[in-house]
Amino acid sequence: MPHTMIHFYHVTKRFDRYSTALHDVTFHIDKGEFVFLTGPSGAGKSTLLKLILRQMKPSDGQIVVNGRNLNAMRRAQLPFFRREIGMVFQDFKLIERMTVFENLSFILTVLGVAPKEHKKKAYGALRAVSLHHKLNAYPPQLSGGEQQRVAVARALINDPLVLIADEPTGNLDPDLSAEILEIFSDANLRGSTVLIATHDRELIQRSGRRVIALDRGRITDEKPAAPERATRAGGLFGIG
Amino acid sequence: MRRDAEIPRSTLGYFFREALRRIWVSKRTSFVAVAMIAISLLILGAFLLLSENLSRAVTRWQGSSRVTVYLDADATPAQVHDVDAFLAAHRDFGARRFVTKEEALARFKSYFTNLSEVVGELDENPFPASFECNVSPRTAQSPAFAREVADLRAVAGIDQVQLDWDWVRRLRRLVDVVNIAGFVAGGILAIAAAFTIANVIRLTMMLYREEIEIMRLVGATERIIRGPFLIEGLLQGTVGALVAVGLLFGSYELARRLLSPASSLLWGFLFAGFLPWQKIAGLIAGGMVAGWLGSWISVRERTEEAT
Image (cartoon, rainbow over all chains, first blue to last red; front, side, top):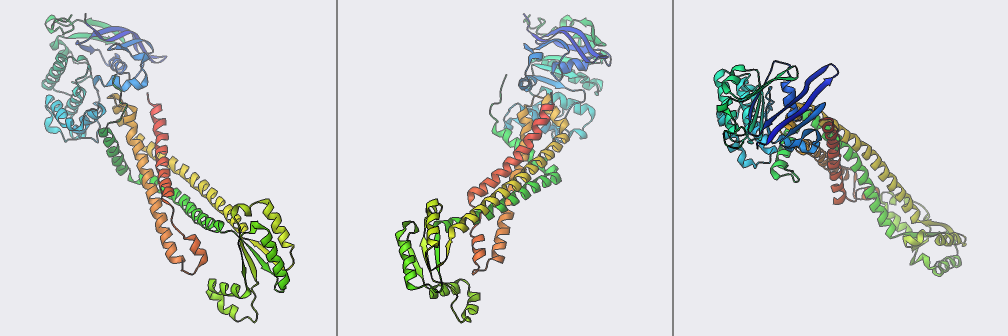
C-alpha cells in the first residue's frame, strides 16, 4: 500500500470575504510520486504550496503531510517539519549578503551538520546543478537562471522527504529546464516526493508525470502519470 | 521530530560571528547603544565608588567609637577627679585616657601643620583638657548609654560631651543616601540603556526581516534566529560595562593624583581605594543583563509577531 505523503481534504483558503484562493480542494500525493501542479496565473498554485509549507493555515479543511496534520501543528514543531521539505521559491529567496556557499552552509548550520562537512556537501549540491565554480559568488552576481539553480541546490542539500518547487524553470532556457527536471527526477528516484508548480506545458507533456490542474482555486483536471513514468509509489519499483 | 535541546558549539560560533558582523555593519547605532550603557554604568559606578569610600571611613571610625569629655578651662582638680570617678563607675565608657591641654595643642599642630604657626602666636593655649573613652558601637547606640551621657553632662566641671558616634551615624545616613541616589540614577539610566539596545536590535531585525523570513522557511528554529540578536545585545552591554569600568578607574586614578596631597585628611578617606572586584563584577554583570534584556525585549516582540 503506498503511503500518502500529502493529503488535502476539502481545503479552502479565503483571504477575505471577496477573495478565495482555494475552494474545497481535495487530493492526495503518495510517497515517491512526482506531480506537476499547473494552471493559469491566479489559479491558486502558490497558495497551495504555501499551505503545504505551513506558511499559512487553511480557512477550512485539513492538510496532512507525512502523517502530520498541519492545522494541529504547534509553532515549535514547525521548523523541524520544514526541514523535511525542500522548497524552491519562485523568487529564489537567497540571502544576498551571503555567498553561494554561505547560503548553502547556513542551511547545514540550521540542520546541525558539522561545519567540516559543509564544504563537501555544498560542493556536491552545487555540482549537481553545474554551479560548483560559483561557490564564492554572491547571488546578485548571478543570472536569474543561476540563482534558480542555487535555490534548487539548497532545496536538495538535505535529501528532503518532499521537494516542492514554484516555477523552477521560469527563468531557464529549454536545455537548463530539462537539466533541472533531470535533477528533480534523480531526487525522486532517491526517494523524495516531488511537487512542481509550473506553467510550462511542454515540460509537463515531455515528462509524462501526473498532473493536477487548478483554475480559480478549484481542481479542474487530474491526469495520471504515463505508465512508463509511474513512480515507485505507482508500482514501477514494485512497492504499490 | 528532532529537537535541538542543546545548542551545538558550531551554532554558538555562528551566533557570535553573526552578532559581531551585525555590530560591525551597524557601527553607529551599536556605538550609541554601547555609549548609553557606558554612561549609565559610569554614573552608577561613581556613586558606588563614593559610597564605598564613605563606608570604609564609617567602618574605620565605627570600630573605634569614642566619647570625648571636654573639661571646663577652669575646672578644679576635685571636679576633674569627680569626672574621672563617674567614668570609672560606668563601665559602658570603657578604657579612658586623660588628654592634657598641652597634649591637645601638640595633637592639633601635628594634624594641621599649616595652622600650627597661627596657634603658636596665641598667648594662651585654647585647647581644653579632656577624657577620651572607647565605647563599643553597640553600646553607643543603646538608650541606656544615652541616659548615662545625659547624667555625665550634669557633672560639674564638664564643658562638652562629644560622641563620635553621631558623626558616624550622620555619615552612615549619607552613605545610604548616596547609595539610593546611585541606584535610582543608575537604574533609570540602565533601563533607558536597555531600551536603547532594544531599539537598536529592533532596527537590526527590521534590516534583516527578509533574511529572518528565509531562515524560518528553511527550518531555522526561533532559537537560531534569535541567538545572534541576543548575543549582539549581550556584547553591546558587556563592552559598555567594560568601557564604564575603564573610564571610572581612569577618572579615579587621575582625580586621586591631582586632588590627593599626602597631608589632606579629607581626600585621604575619599580616595582610600577603588571598587572591590565584587562590585566591578556586578557592574559588568549589570551591563550584560541590560544588553541581554534590551535585545530580549525586541527579539521577543518581533518573533511573536511572526507566524
